[in-house]
Image (tube, rainbow, N blue to C red; front, side):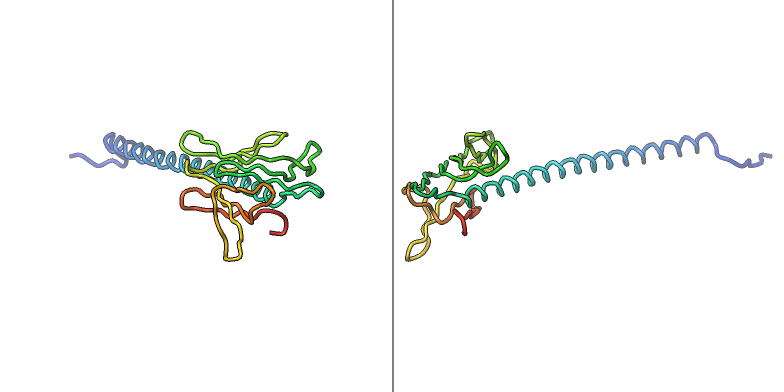
Length: 176
C-alpha cells in the first residue's frame, strides 16, 4: 500500500515555475509599456514647455516694440513675416534696441516661427503649414483684420498668430 508523502511532485513544481514565468513575462510587458508611455509624456511636456517659453518671448518682443524718440516707428509685415524695432537681450544680458524679424518658415510636416536679429535666431513656436500672421486695427466702426500691414509708420493694435482655426492674439506696444 502506498502512503502519501508530504511535499510536491515534479510535475507540480514544473507547473508552478511555468505559471510564475508567464506571470512575470506579462508583468514585464506591462511595465515596459508604462516606461514607454512615461517617456512619451516627458517628451510632450518638454515640447509644451518650449512652446510656452517661445510664446512668452514673442509676447515680450511685441510688447516692447519701440518708438525711438525722434525717429519714425517702423512696422512692416505680411502674412509670413514681420519686421520692427524692439528691445532684445544684448551681449551684457541687458535689454538693448534691436531690429527684429519674425518669420514663419516651412519645415517638413508643419511650420516654425523664428525670431531673427543681429545676435542670432531663436525658434519660438512650432505649428502647422497653415500658420500665418494677421493684423488687427481699431477703427471708429470697430476692429478690422488684414493679412498684410500696409503702413510702415503706424503699428497695428494687435498681431494674431493664426494656425488653422486657432488665433493667438498678441497686443503690440507698451501699455497694451
